[in-house]
Length: 242
Image 1: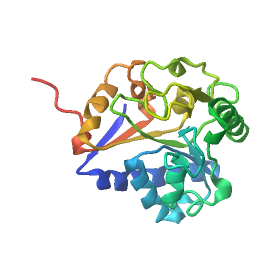
Image 2: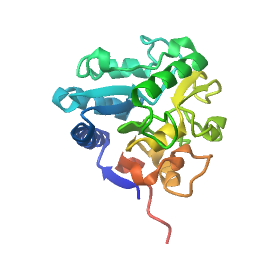
Image 3: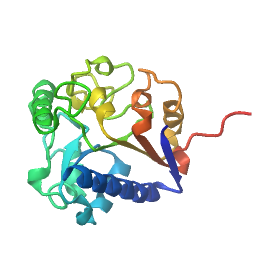
């Protein structure tokens, strides 16, 4: 079952999320000697990264990956990597040699192929398919349309084969249209996914996510027994009708 926690506001969501991440990384290190954490973009995840960066001891022996990236350079304002770097998480709290960014500037196909190769080489073999990488925790946001990473409603990417690791996106409904994303198979293979949401604009998507799985709402396709949702009161689904 999905574990759902509501908080008073977005800063409290970030605080709870940082504690959850630290605990997951500690478990991973205890069991395997290293922790693998994947990051997403967004305001609430960014606040969480700032808190984690302030406690670098919680990030010992942690390697950073990315759930998705826009096809822009690492210095572009739209870059998820730049967000992680500006919050002090990537390159400071976690040394640069343990930060594995998606090379968005290579374009969607080559960037996705390179990241697939890297993930398979470093983490392959632990998942349900040959070479499928298993991340310890993936931090995700959710869009008002229910998208996660760069997996959008009705996208053919949602029906990619179970052996697919990274996917090229050329038709994102949100700009820029070209992106790189982890596949649904990788998200489902992860030992845990942490989904963060704040603001009333996300409430309908969160509510729908908890319903029947559907390609029209990608967040609903995550493995619920491995999913933790932390959201503020404004994003919380309303009570069922009487």
